Image 1 (tube, rainbow over the protein chains, first blue to last red):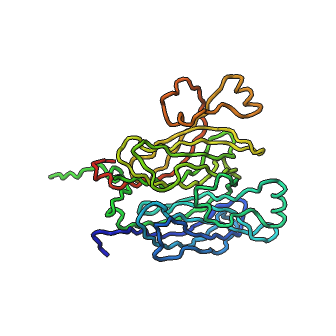
Image 2: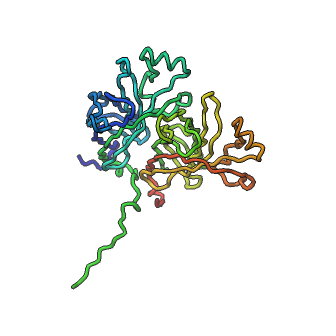
Image 3: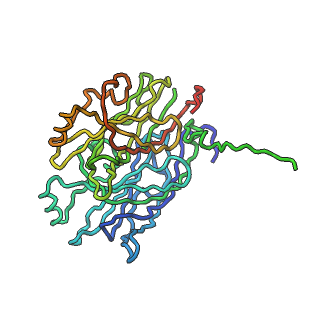
Length: 201
Length: 175
């Protein structure tokens, strides 16, 4: 377990895709996958998954999945830090399965517990006619590869509409980042500024 | 040599008159910095939010710099544009922010401003749209030539960035 000169650092991710907030849609399920750079490799855990279908209860407005995430990565370089891409699907008025939102966020960078709420968006049709035909035929515009959502280039020509949120909880553990020379937290933030004083009574 | 990682995303923008927005961003550094990997400029998607006022882009930023000196610490500059239903693009604001110098996670708000023309320009802007723009984007992040400019404040852009520093302590740098 102990190594004096490590060449890789490890990132362990636990958590769950907790719930979604989509005011206009119901009966949704989600798919997740991880996108990472060339220097990263998953060492254990599942890289992709599909959740159950959830609906809003009578009184509550929240769509709960409670869907577990469990994966570990190893890497030599923080560049290409993994992102989780979540895609949410649900039925439309005619019963076809259509996409309700895509969203992506980086795995949190510092050890500890983090709760993230990510906005979900769908690609927008180019013209009103296409919007009508896609509503009629049940074939909405969607990305051929959801991993596009995690990339920065090529997005300048896409028009999207954001229409909901997904809440994800993460617990992060890192190993050997300090040994490799990476400073990930500021020293000033960890100092409490209190000094111990002893009093003789 | 010391290394700097900037990883995060441009979350979105709020407080603008209309909310069908996109953002062109770029990172500018001094001469001592070299970009090893990542894209240092880009343009986000156009977002039209269904509910609420905030336009969400979730645009990922992942940059790896190496440096020989502290001068010219990276600055992120951005331009927020509005695309209307006819496909015309109108400038809504310029803004810049320094990349944080302390390691860790930061939630940042970048304020933006827009150049204001004469009263005739403002009148035609009200009817037809458009408006004055800067001829060269250098002015967004430099203070050198601003004294003649008359501007008006616009909304804010939210970003979440995490900074990793490597080997800065070898050179005696405290941050």
